[in-house]
Image 1 (cartoon, one colour):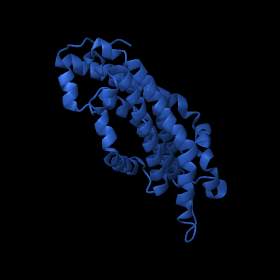
Image 2 (cartoon, helix red, strand yellow):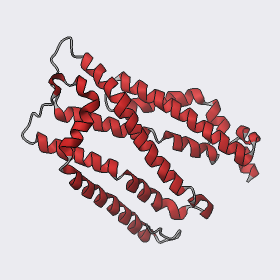
Image 3 (spheres, one colour):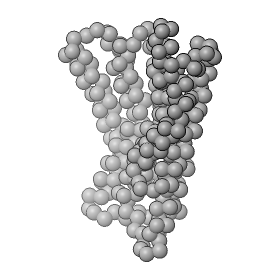
Image 4 (cartoon, one colour):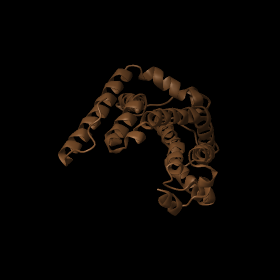
Length: 258
């Protein structure tokens, strides 16, 4: 897709932004319309990891518009997931003209990494988080009430968890670039790990849409692992590019070096 020039009048920048937002919106609408007819199959796949935690094995629709609302919602969420590469590319491409030529070579690897991490987060949620979360949630009511699995409630929670985990799994990319580009020195990120862990716990509580401690703990464990892995990768890049002494640099050291 074409990239605009680095310097443009404000109205041209707004026009470029509108063009890219239009591409995103049109792509989402087309994907949702195509997917709509396949939503029964898609819903069956979505429910597969929690099948054992659906009392009676079937969801209940409580309103006349419930079936259409659920299918439309699933189609929109699925359209967003399918169009994730387009959405990420259009957002990054809008800022691409502001980058230096040597920085632009990182854009394609960044797009690929963002897409991969988003889908990896969804896979982790599907196979690990969903069964654990719904198992725990159902157990909370089993001693005093009969659980009536409402379709809209179940599917909304599943899709929000999937997207929440997908977004949260972008953390390694953020950590890598902050460290590798010395925006936040490696020594600072390594030394402040206690505060960062507390921050990740807060993020885990905010990103997970249910009140279940199970999903929060799973998210927290995944984010800590991803944080440490990304910091380890950034460490290797810094050592190879700037030498081992760069691991101890402060922001002042990096500014003086430049």
